[in-house]
Length: 381
Image (cartoon, rainbow, N blue to C red; front, side, top):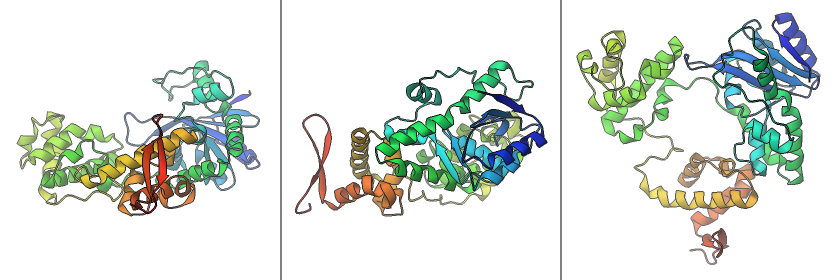
């Protein structure tokens, strides 16, 4: 493996022109976000057939990389955060992505780490890195560069192996369809009005308390994005829940709120919180159709039955069950709203079975060995 460190714009621009003739390149990122709202890109690793390149984004504008997004396939592993970082740095994401963690799930690997997958398929042990390393430190140490390079060194080879196995099982199209969804996901920051859906234990609140929590989450998210701070630094989840339950009318009442900094509660932040509570609506925003409200108990038996069959299908077909359907997919399907189970390979593998179960055309039974089997019911129940 050749390893090249890129720390000038001219070098990077020249490389990008070279990659225009590559059908595929492998990519990974190193970033920090513990002290900021937005991930701060510290290093970009790209492998091509000639070797590995470590690009220093503190010296190089990587925006020109977007010129490859329509023509080149990008191979990544566990790509969600990397694509979010790319979106932030370049304004969009590649049109065609192959995620080796994702496609490995179609041959029975359940969200495998890169090191485990490379060891299992290629037979190479990757170097262990320090997860707390400072990727903004310069110069990078030899160990840092070796670890960073290993994140992309085998990705192209790994993707070839996985795709060959998928093709032999007639699942390559399924895997590519799942990867295509990655390019259509939302990578821009969450809309503040939707931030409450990430609040743990928000479902324990009802009525005005939930409406207040929703308003507080929207305010917190907007402030966090504006000041590039983690939302928890603006106001902790515990404090959001406590304030929402109490709905105080004076800043003095905020000083003893659990999870809040008493000093900040006396200042501008405290005044803003009181204003948010004062203007919060009485009625909460309803849950999305794909989310399961704990108050909606009538769906629980159907969800339990559906997820049991999905787990059995995953075991039988050696596919990660989370690729077949998520809980949100199941809830949407049961509620009759658009779902990924309505079309494509998921409809053929999962959706039709669930439709038959719901319509009484099929039933689940045990086969005597502790496994579920689907039986056709004629006439329907």
